[in-house]
Length: 175
Image (cartoon, rainbow, N blue to C red; front, side, top):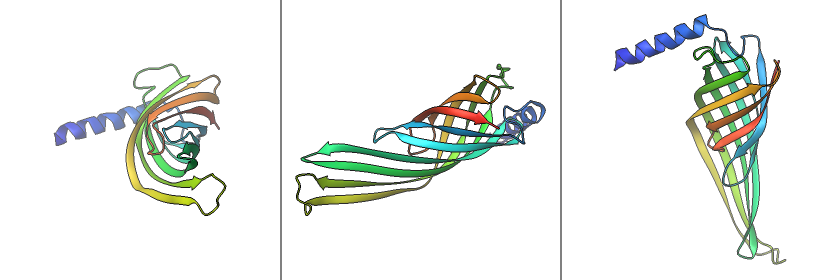
């Protein structure tokens, strides 16, 4: 098993060293979009950096808020997330068109959210409660893709990933 793992690792590194990267070492890309999640839609912004052929590393910030009616009152969810990611881009491995970027990788993330439950009957003393939650550090997997309309501008879709979103959709700008 150890030899198989090392063989796959050496093969991936070899392919990465001899292929063209979708994001060159001097390039960066900014991503912005919306995360899809049961307790509200997240707004996300992040940046990726080319660090090796076909490998990027980046970071992301997410904010989420949602309010629902609850037993004569309301329940409000607020969340904040930070993440770091590393992705392998498969375009050269699968000989994809340069407008298509398919990737997969790992991320390390932290998410904090709070829930306020308040009575909206008009009585300010009827505050029901508050719950704070912190995820601690988590490791997740993601897979995603981008389609570039120009050399610099594209759209993206990602599944999995950060603990504050089951998936996300947005735009990407390279510079």
